[in-house]
Image: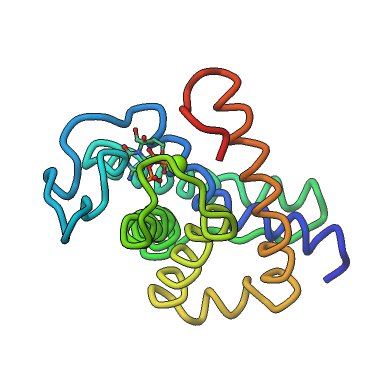
Length: 181
Ligand code: CTP
Ligand code: MG
C-alpha cells in the first residue's frame, strides 16, 4: 500500500470509532452509568458518562459503519483504493470499544484524583483508540489483520490525537463541550 492509501484506509476504518464519543457529547445527560455511586472518596465514573450518551454514541458508530459498508465499493473504485466494509460484529466492536475506552479512562481519572472534565494528556487522546482496536480485533481477528496492518496502525496512532484535538476544539468553540479536551 502506498502512503495515500494507508492514510485513507486508516481514516476510513477508524471512522466508526471516531464518531461515537462526539455523538455522545450531543445527547449526553440523564442517568449516569455509575448511578451516582462512589468508590472510596470519589465517583466510580462521574456524571460525564451516561447511559444515553453511551447507547446513542454506539448506535451512531454502528449506523455509520453500515453506511460506509454500502458505499465502500463505489468510493473505493472511484478513488482507486480498496476500502474495507464492516461486518456487524466489527462495526459494534469499533463503536462500543471507543465508548468503553473513554469510560475506562474516566474510571482511571477518578482513581487518580481527577474531577470530571480534568485533562489527562495522552489518555484523553488514545483511550478510545485502544478500546476500539481491542474490541474490533476480538470481534473478527481475520478482518482486523487484513485491514489494520502495521503501517495503518502507525497512522492511526499519529493521526488520531490530531483529529481528536481538532474536533474537540471545534466542539468547545461551538459550546457543545465544557473543555477543549
Ligand atoms: N458523554 C456521555 N456518555 C459518555 C461519554 C460522554 O453522556 N459515555 C457526554 C457527557 O455529557 C459528557 C460529554 O459527553 O459530559 C463530554 O464527554 P467527556 O469529555 O468524555 O466527559 P467529561 O464530562 O469530561 O468527564 P470525564 O472527566 O469523565 O471525561
Ligand atoms: Mg472530558
